Image 1 (cartoon, rainbow, N blue to C red):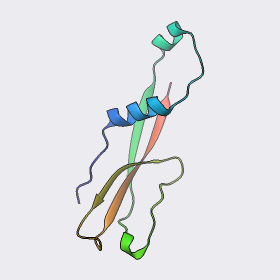
Image 2 (tube, one colour):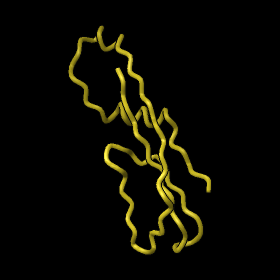
Image 3 (tube, rainbow, N blue to C red):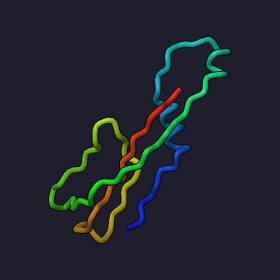
Image 4 (cartoon, rainbow, N blue to C red):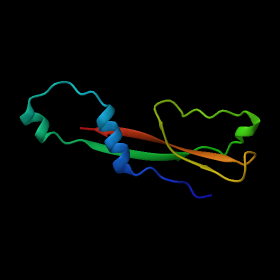
Length: 86
């Protein structure tokens, strides 16, 4: 079953927009290097119509979802561990 992947650049932009960094001088900020790493994982397929909820594991983010069939079909979720280094 094909999954739609969230591009790494989009994850990076979202993290940049949501991350609050301590104030640093402009010169130091311009030379700081940050590495963003996305480690992908998958969940088992769930049948939402049975009332089975999905929750991302702790410290992971939802990065994809796919569904097959009608409202009684199966739904798969992709979640990833996103880490910042630097």
